Amino acid sequence: MFRPVRILQVTSVFLLIAGCGTTQTSAITPAPSKAPATVATHAAPPTGFTAQTSPAIKAGVSTVGSNGFLQADGRLTANLQSYAQEVSQVRGIPLPYVVAILENAQYNATAAKLMAPSKTRIRRSWVTYRNRFVEPVRINKGVAFWSQHQAILDKAARTYGVPPSVIVAIIGVETVYGQQTGNFRVLDALATLGFRYPDDSRPERSQLFRDQLADLIQLDYQKKLDARTVQGSFAGAMGLPQFMPGSLMRYAVDGDNDGRIDLLHNVDDAIFSVANFLRLHGWEPGVPVFAPLTLPPNAQNLVKGGLYPTYAWATLEDLGAKLQPISGNLASKGVSQGITPAVAAGTAGASWKNHKLGVVDLLDEPRNTAEYRTGTPNFFAITHYNRSYFYASSVADLAQELADRKGYGGPN
Image (cartoon, rainbow, N blue to C red; front, side, top):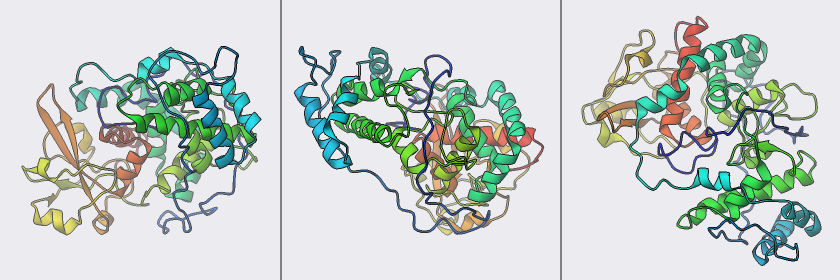
């Protein structure tokens, strides 16, 4: 779910996973949900929600290197001691408790290597990226996963307005339906990337991981997981949906109402948590991921980037965009400038015209081609899961393939 930059340097920091999923994610006792118990498919977004975040931990700095986090006498380095004191004060956790967890952290060279910037610029390839995820294994396993968990997927769709196809696609892209959840100890990964980030020119990235480490310690203190044993990706993401500790704190849902949340072993919890995350990041029920438009030849000039749509439909129409008939799976037409598949969610109606839109660029530098699509708020909701336009478009295209295979015959 975490991606520092929108490039194709790596598939995703959650998708370069070493080994298969044999991890242990402790069950989590849920806090009261911010979303209503039931939300009709076309209901208004949940009220009273604000994107709550814990205060950043300002103490602590990252220094490139492979040394550990302890002094010769076994105590934390001065840098980590300062960090521990602020975590204790800000999060209301006894200092000895914080120190004991940090003293258990170990430097992980593999996590640092996987996060290190490439020495050469990687040429972005949409075709290569898409083929990595919209492929037979994820499609076949996705259909089976959908059929096996049809009831809970339908319930999540009714509750949050997020179609089963999109939920299944995200879990498929992230972990191949739980097969690749990671075998890194999350404590080690977050400490390494928080205090030994391999690129000292980007201090905001190490800050992110130090804040996630504080979230992990808080979750441990609340007895919602065991920070010393929980495993995940090399970036610290956990479970079938690969939630970072902060997302686990704020968006995870008890899908089967058993009084605890387990994103690794409990598929119901994972499904509801993905749907909850998307809804609380702007998902609009009944709206497709892409608007069915043909863009003008200068579509590249309409790309503004970012995680939020900015154009009104009338504005794009004035700039030369035209309505495009929806017939079959437009995603199968391949890479061509101006094709904008209306895939993966909602209905084929015109409800998208009532929302802001954004032009999405899918470049393939080795092939010297480009595809441009028009994203709705639902496309941008997926980018909050992972900032890459490649990622969000692959999720949408995989969702369409899954819906087609399930026999829905159109966007779902």
